[in-house]
Length: 483
Ligand code: AMP
Ligand code: ZN
Image 1 (cartoon, rainbow, N blue to C red):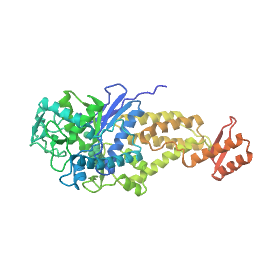
Image 2 (tube, helix red, strand yellow):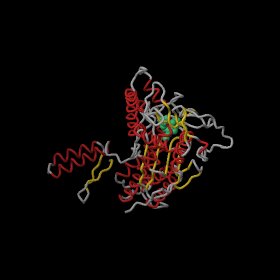
Image 3 (cartoon, rainbow, N blue to C red):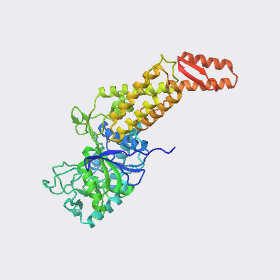
Image 4 (cartoon, helix red, strand yellow):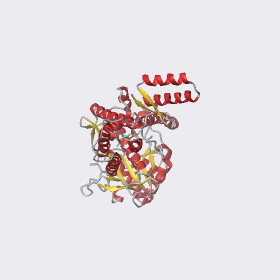
């Protein structure tokens, strides 16, 4: 059966409206997410953004779209240079400077990818490192210069924002009141200091460098994403995403660079996730108020519980991190997982008639509809999950009275699989008790096939000790239930 493809809507920072995502190529979504700056451990605030993007990607996939995902690795940038070059002698060769920078960034890239794996975040199709795309960045800067959008000063190249009339439209800057200051060399600055920004930085003593038509130097941060995005996803992409702090100046500048060069719209949907906070403040390395995933794991937190705690809240709402929130997430997951185990097992005889207002399968279809309507409406996870919990409450009560049939149970399990494809938190468990029971049932089947009756009886007793009652069926298969 061909899977139905659903249209999803997302809030677009550019238009400030929830709009349907209508891909440039039917059935295929191109997604660019700004990746980590790899000079230290990611904190769980950073990970909130990557978890929101994983939810976004998985929702499109579950809705029947193919997703081509590019996440860059920022492996040359001010902070990386600060942390990797500090201990080097003044006369260190350029080659050794690059090697030192690479040693730092490769170490933290590996750690970052381990964090993503632990959180069930799917790997991007493209994971380009900025240092592998310097020639593309140089070409893009040359192009901007040829179009009159960039100028050289003292070996650095700057973007001339006066040449791009749309500058400020993503961050909704008031162009009239804009104080256009002198050009800046820093990659990060506030929106009240709108300036010509740097594309290429002339080398300073103590920095790794590349050759360029403007002399030795290194790329600015913003040009990295424009060059990699255009190279790997083409001239028009469907979705570009990051945390809200990237709207300005990073994404504003990316847009000015790419659209200035292309002469047409580059990104259809700009999608930004809100912050993870701690006691009313943004979680940030500079504020020292952060946890890494490893800090939490050392405290016994399951990464998937963190995943759920974050994803069960709407991505455009500020979220306060708390251990209480993690406990609530753990309880919610226990409820869904216990329900799954119940549906995987066989129904009990039941406690008697139940005046159902709706058949279980009708109830299930309603839950599915509500779930998808919520997800399609700007990834409204709280509402989508509420539909799952209502279904669980209803079907648990139903199953207590009149056991759901195997067919009904399987239909419910298919819905749990469908939702787990997005949340990745309640998969079918083959380990634990279920796995052990299945393995023992298989051992008993093999013993019986070999006519080894004492062994078959021994395994049956072992299962009995686990509280499992076996039911040999007419068709030769064996079912089981907790006795
Ligand atoms: P960085 O490694 O600093 O480039 O940041 C990686 C991602 O984390 C970016 O998309 C940021 O917007 C995001 N980010 C940084 N701090 C937070 C926070 N406290 N909550 C959510 N996202 C954040
Ligand atoms: Zn970026």
